[in-house]
Length: 289
Image 1 (cartoon, rainbow, N blue to C red):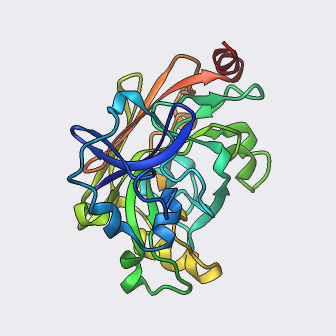
Image 2: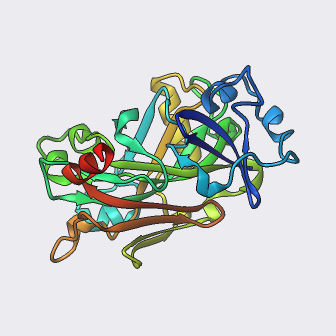
């Protein structure tokens, strides 16, 4: 299944994305008003039972939200592809490099990624996001994939100068509306081996990043095992697995996203996360109008 969180008018919901439209699960499954609630109850089978129902909305009629608008935790993994290690000059890490994002730093597919007033160094990072469906602590690598509900595209938009104020990345990764998550998650029954997928990022139609997911330094099971060792994972948590080489910061000259750009992250078997880029003042003026 393709499952998205969305807004129709003033009402936020979630549902199944089909070729014919969107099946609104939020209004059908009263016990699970959000996707996070559904995952926390282990009720994906109840959602799957709705697949034959008539769609409620056309995809063009809804506003996509971040796939999980309200995750308990968002873990982001730094320098986790060999090509990105090489371009950044980092040595191969012994352990995953982890920083965190806040929920309000995210937007959904089609929503503008916001370049803040404080910087012009707004960089793209196409990534694979892992959505946890079954919680746990000290999860063994061998059983880790059984804890995954699905996968989505992610653009870990980064304010590079703020990221490098200190050795801690969080300030450059948490400006409001700078990261994109979506357009939906694809459940694991449709992706038997995530390592066989490919990822690409395009800026204004030009490919700027491309790699197989198999190039991860720490793969998905390793990341789940590591993160669940120092904290308890819960349904709806998100692990954003890192970006490959080709980021704007290491190009000559640097390639920064700017107002009016369109950035896409595509993962085979999942879909295309497409977002316009807006300056903060432009986005504010548009909302006010």
